[in-house]
Length: 158
Image (cartoon, rainbow, N blue to C red; front, side, top):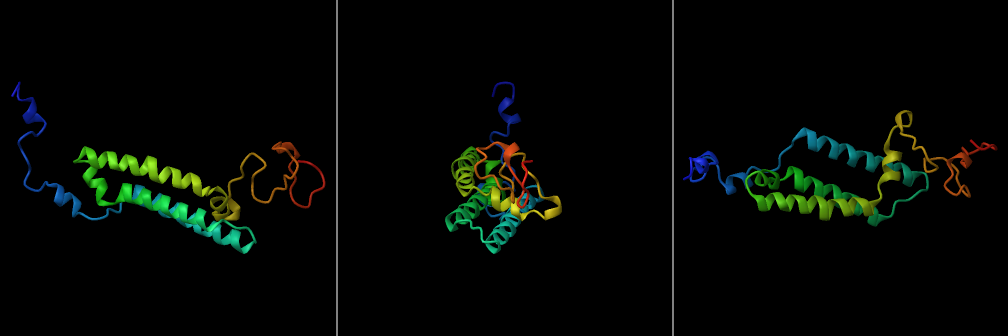
């Protein structure tokens, strides 16, 4: 060993409580900084989907399934035993990256959850996007020009 560098990195020394099988057996973690945003987004989406369906709007079933699968992929990557393994095994860490980049991200993009998420917010704190695409705005024929959008029932441009 050159200057004891390998010993500094733990080469040849395995602590008695550390093993891949022990890490895999830990089960799902409930880290609040990960679980809370996932539950919040899932709840907002469910409430928004319910409100949209009651008002006659619709979110296609395959988009709802894509949103659910995307959130599930995020949970598997960040809350499952895979997260514990990712700290010990580079291959598990790369599998985490694949789940996040190649599975969760495309599914969430295909789900196009923004309308349902906006309808999920309470009315008093609902975000109002700066363009023509906010809920309740009539923008037919505006060509994307937000100055030509009208609130329903108004006769003048806003």
